[in-house]
Image 1 (cartoon, rainbow, N blue to C red):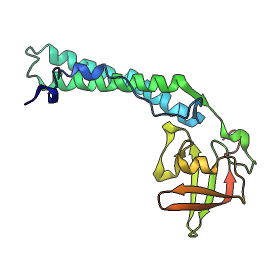
Image 2: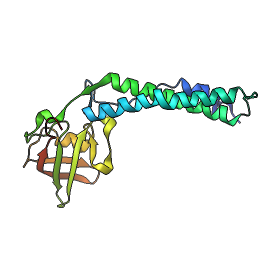
Image 3: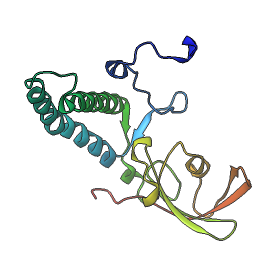
Image 4: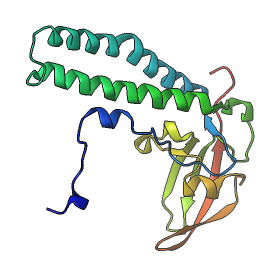
Length: 188
């Protein structure tokens, strides 16, 4: 086999040095996130540091004390799991450091679409949908939570109830009629 198609170093430790890649945000923009999303990320990193990582370190220590590490499944898997946890901690730390918390309840009563709005709209075929515009780390399509940088959200942003906006799609231009814009109540 040609050397150009082989990997010289296949050690598992090499994966540990891979740079954590964050999803691209529009140039000059911030990593917007709701207070609830920020709290969820903070809780996840706290659980990883205080609960998950110490458990895995204990298992790896026990497995290392058993002798030959080259064929010790608990040791090998534990080290791999530690790298995964550490990688996730680094990712979450970067996300939290770059986060700009925006409370959408400050827009309560407004009919214009901004970050944090829940928007009910109708497509030109009559299909009604409801979406909430959230940060990139809070996306949950099953619950109708879309990123503020998604094409649908970008088409909706700054529009008002009653407006019709155009959304370019591979199948052609889609017209979206904005039926309702709501924000959470302050203090909820």
